[in-house]
Image 1 (spheres, one colour):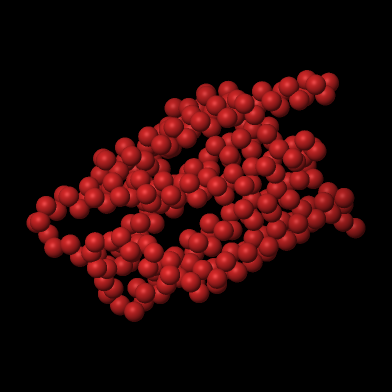
Image 2 (cartoon, rainbow, N blue to C red; image 1 turned 90 degrees about the vertical axis):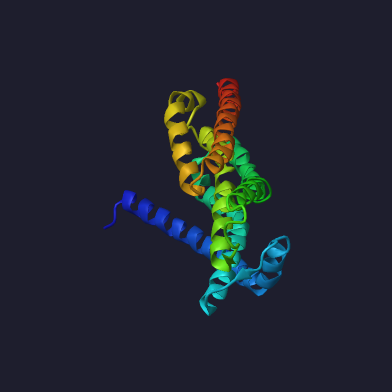
Length: 242
């Protein structure tokens, strides 16, 4: 005979499975829709490029199409994934915590779009022009479609996820997992992780690293300040309840 603990564990796994299926299903639907309109997306992205992109084989075309459709699908799936995660943890939350944490879901999507836009409209043009200036007519400019979009992806998509750091920290503070004082204690370790992350996601040049490290550190400090606001508000609610 199964123990109550085993029954609860099975129930949790079934609930998690349900949430994962809905999230994956959302991604697949959005992926198919994005793939149908991928040519329009491609034309919009390359409309401002001064050089002609080339392909080295038929598979490069498919790779770019799949990449663009995947990025669009990921962007659209984030709110659904966050909502499914909220539904999964909702039974463990109090009524006030449910309302507060639910409000973070639109912010996740908004910050993801802002992060991608920041990478695409700010970081990418600066790094792109800087790297081109290094050639100074010494080399013939020739870009393959795969190389160009791989570079573009590395300069934009990570910012979408990294810009969500403040909301994630606020959410974890609301749940009691983190607090601002703990974040302040691990500040130097966090800086080290952010610097390593910036170096890994950018091309191997100092300018790119600096342009990425500065906003990441700024985001972390904003996260600490927002965590303080959430933490103090949570303490006031607890004192009022007592």
